[in-house]
Length: 181
Image (cartoon, rainbow, N blue to C red; front, side, top):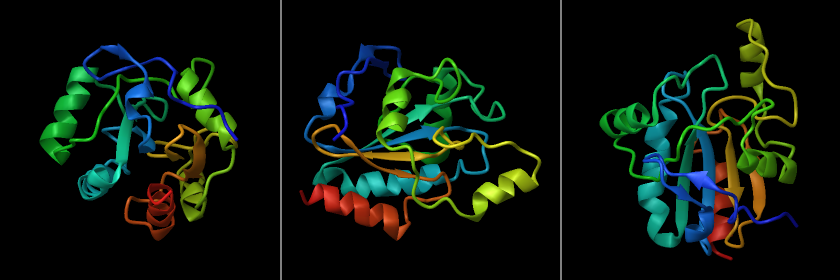
């Protein structure tokens, strides 16, 4: 059993100090997002999943991060505008944080510690290496759009590699299993 994520301080994309307490009793999918990444089109699938599953109790929470090739250089206002205009993102976005390195946000420290192994680590990792990039070693967040699934008690229950999309049956099945509990 892992510690709850509910009491960790975060900021909304508009700068208000808060915690994730407001999501108690919901299933959460936390995603580190970026606007200038090859995976950025995942916003579309995440928004579709959110609109289709919000009424069942799913909340998708986006945490912009600039840790990977400076692929999220914008301010919080610019990020919010980009997501709204380009992907009509309606799920909650939070203020830009660090998800890797010495300045890693406490939320991501907790997520990584709870689930050090990710599901779906396949050929995409090798593609990064083939491009001359050095992905973070385990257990660190590999890249943008890594996903953490949190149950209704605020416990981290699964972790998915960045190339696992919102349409992937492994992710959908895990979400559905948590919604049904």
